[in-house]
Length: 255
Image 1 (cartoon, rainbow, N blue to C red):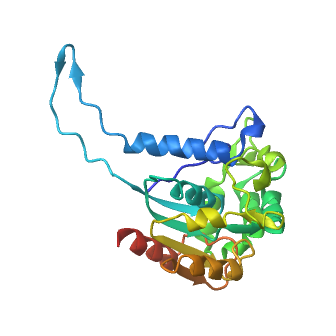
Image 2: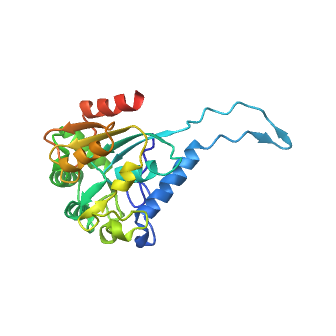
Image 3: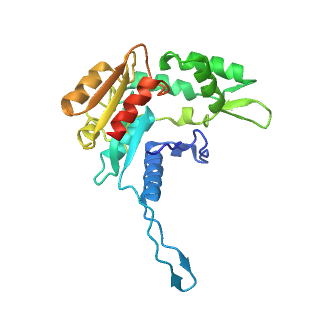
């Protein structure tokens, strides 16, 4: 299973050319990462001698668990010919996202946000991430601690490049997004969804506006074998921090 941070987020570097924050970049980076971790180990050499050794087992395929944008990247990768993705978990995302939902998500990464202390960070996250559903105080503090870094001025800043909010673009302007017939209403990846062949589990927050119930039903109609778990009292997106959510993903991947 791969757990990368895409460019400009988490511990990944910020891009010099802010226009490169696009799915073309994210997919190229993901493909390079997958190629690297699935490449056979090179035999050891010393001078003119080559030591014969048994290479460590290398997985022929990987599992991909993607939340929101990470799920879109997973779908696009899984639909490519010869994809190494063995099992795909989509956390509250599907092949159609309305522009209204996308613009709401864009608001989360708009502008520079910094804080004086962790208490302020936690209060902010409790507000903007309330759709995550009920989390314990310990879990909220965990999110706060791992969502920021300390600046040279001693402030705490969220771990993403604020320029992402200025450069997030609709799917119609990104060459990696096929233009579906419903693109005027939102991101349309139905042709991508139809091309995925690997076993797939879809988690949906029952209150989500990013993955609507209508979209979920269409996903099941196109691919009857897809597995679904809806989580009551949760919006976008399940935090994957509770026992029942973790157990469902674990069982699916280890089956």
